[in-house]
Length: 178
Image 1 (spheres, rainbow, N blue to C red):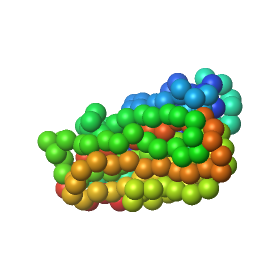
Image 2 (image 1 turned 120 degrees about the vertical axis):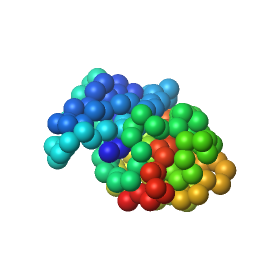
Image 3 (image 1 turned 60 degrees about the vertical axis):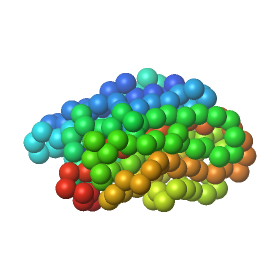
């Protein structure tokens, strides 16, 4: 399970609770009065259908909860394929990550961003958009069956404003995720 969240900086997620799921914060960025986070959930048995995120403050936090089969466990995410970025331009861009082939040759990448402006286009870099909670909240994924270099994504907004973006890669067991 992956939970991608974005909010104003005071809307950081302090914990996620779900029956039979252990949640781990993989990456976060809140440098520009916004917040973007990625959480990985490791299922140990039949999981409850709802996850509850505890927030530092109620500031319009949005999220995208997605379930993926075929991925390696949360503890196996590649630290070389996990990064955060921030800025104040009209384009919010994740850092570029280069996963290690030693951790696997197939990867699932998840990205999240929050921008103070109005969404215009994206994601870029071959990523596919996940459902969003509004104009400033952006989430995306990419499944790579064979590593070939570095990966990043971004979104364009109508004007420059503070933004934060995060990206993480998780090896896929057997090369197939869905």
